[in-house]
Image 1 (spheres, rainbow, N blue to C red):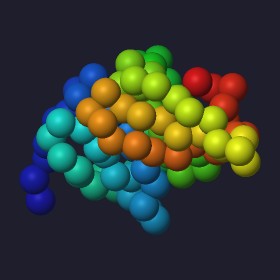
Image 2: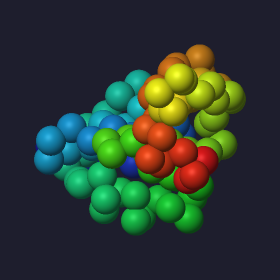
Image 3: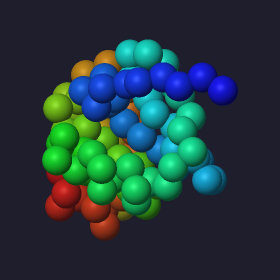
Length: 93
């Protein structure tokens, strides 16, 4: 197995994928065998916040946010990528 080191500021957002998390950034996508809660605890001080039950976002990667009628919100990242946040976690951003 190969180990890759990624700096927190290279990651835009993270999504839970079963027993793994999928990291998203300029490097593309990468899987790591960790829980989302574990990663959240580790990266909180680097500006990552939970925006959905299964997603974390690095605040510095956010370009804009748009609220939907349901109260959920869409986050547009500086990369142009769009992800959905849950109204339950809106206060985190």
